Amino acid sequence: MNEMPGWILEATGLDGPGFLYGVAAVLAGAWLKGYTGFGASMLWMTSLSLLLPPLQVVPMVLMFEVVTSIALLPRIWKDVRWRSIGLLLLGTWAATPVGIHALSSLPAAPIRMALAVVVLVAAILILRGFALAKEPGRPATVGVGLMAGVLNGSMGIVGPPVILFYFSSPIGVVAGRASIIAYFIGTDSVGTLMFAARGLIDESVWWRTAVFVPVLIAGVVAGNRGFVKTDPETFKRVALFVLMALSVLLFARAVWPG
Image (cartoon, rainbow, N blue to C red; front, side):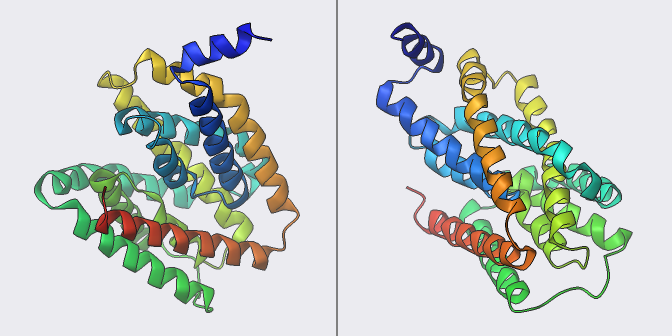
């Protein structure tokens, strides 16, 4: 009984209280991912950055997203809109370098504040009944992907345009949630590979991710069970409230970065 905790602490490089805090943070994010399909990255980034340097947190969060999305994939496969995901990823991958250039030439705080306001207003509009009459065509879908790519490169946040895209679409919340989860596999897998190629994922990050995998699986399964038992309209309201809360958090972090 004493050897396992010691081995875990050595592998993760954390002390006892730090490890328990990490478990709670990882579990909360995984449950949120399993229920809504999004929101986990910002929760993990905010909470785990209090415990570890951001340079170690970011690649770990990318791998958390990949693990949880793959764990959910068998349950959502039949509902995913693969065609729209392909178009979104095409735009995202093409525009990410533009976002990276913006990061190096523009101040980050105003961009974050503008994104937070736009997301908050859009979420409120959808909550009050705004919806597209039909599923967007190729140009609009690629355009949303381009917007997500710019945000991905400039501030590491790819989700809000895609989340709003699917939740305002008439395809329904089940297909929208499934497509959001599948989309994150494409973006976060590429992000992980980019970090690994640059040598930014060291042994401690790999070990921490591996140790937390059971916690991730338990959380995402529990969250998915909550989704299955929830009425679609109730789920949509909850998911939009989560998105609104995250936009407020993003605005607060831009105003008070410390």
